Image (cartoon, rainbow, N blue to C red; front, top):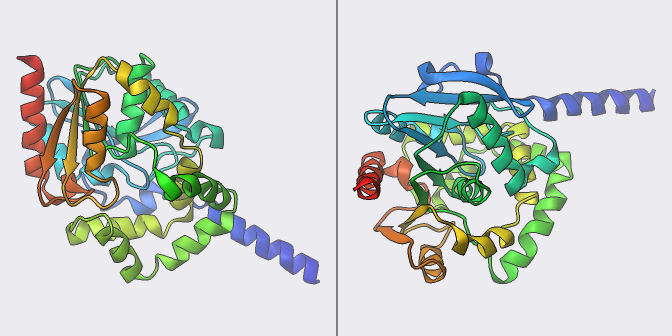
Length: 308
């Protein structure tokens, strides 16, 4: 009897861990929902948002986020561009691929497959945090050839010191244990915990955005994908290759970013003197969610400079 009960509890736990966000159940109030559709590419089903007309522009969010991160920026950019923004693999409403495809090269190639299916050749690419690393890898691997890559508080360099030595092994341990994602999702039921995490980015975002982050943090499948991404992440190869990048690079750095130090942008500039650093005083890691208009104007200016 005890063994049967244990097996039944294990199956129930497995179902809870595998429960992904469902578009019909969880996406009814999703930001810019009318611009959403689902696309099969690279062996997985993607949630993609598309809006506007003009030169093609690709938006790539960072670890643990989704298209909701662009809720304010997407409509502004769509006034001048044909904008495409997907949920990354395993994030939000996009399906989870095999774990080895959650590496930086793996995700770059998966995104390349999506662009091929969409028949999109982006002229401008904008990536936030880890999204900027994915776009840089895609440029270096000739998967895309944009005129300009705009990195919003980009995570382009390996963590240094003790955090760098501990981060990947710890992430691997957490990603290998399904209970870790379940425990985090359970803890995220405490609204104060998610608020503390958001404050830790150095940004203050609106209540609607904070509510979606809490919803995501309470979903074990989404949390598990973020952990899997971090466990498979290695930026040393990217840092080695970045000086070979031919695409124009604009490094946007929030002065109040507590996740990716703004000093990283200047370290990158030392490696790549051709890169441009744009500092955003007073804004944190989620600068594009804090002041979408300000970031949109910055992007418009960067694009006009790139085409002049």
